[in-house]
Length: 218
Image (cartoon, rainbow, N blue to C red; front, side):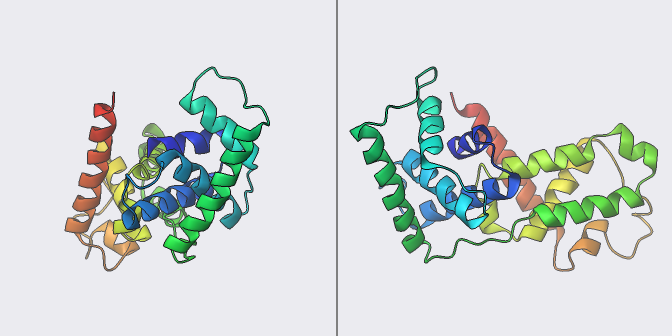
């Protein structure tokens, strides 16, 4: 899964298209055995499809060359030979396969807009010094980006993921929300009525597991 995000960054994709590409990739392999198809081919097709869905169109040639450099660092761009055109055709055919497997449901609700709204609210709640001295916002965005290394986007609601990464960022820097003890309900339930502490704990646990898995990859 690291491969998809690496390709996205090198292709200059924006955060929403990246999230869509990762979600397409994860959802496809939830339906299909991981050994049935080449993950890199599916990753390239997911990028190509996500670019269309989110209107950040990518050229197949750029996807192929960036993917080739990731797989073979230091290599030259591929020649426009039979191998290149065969790979391009494979990406297009795989895109059609992905669409059929996902039943053409490739438009998703991502946590990004919720996290932006929650961060603005939280900034207004905290005093200026607490907000400026800790990179809560930067950390929350980084946690959200990294959550797409795993399948959190398929298992939890977008609003819940947004709250959970914000909760973890606050915990990481020991920042407390003012008047939390006196409030009728926790700050995170103000953002999402149906959210519970066990759900937050499950998301945070899954996210930490992603980091654990990444450190174990040689």
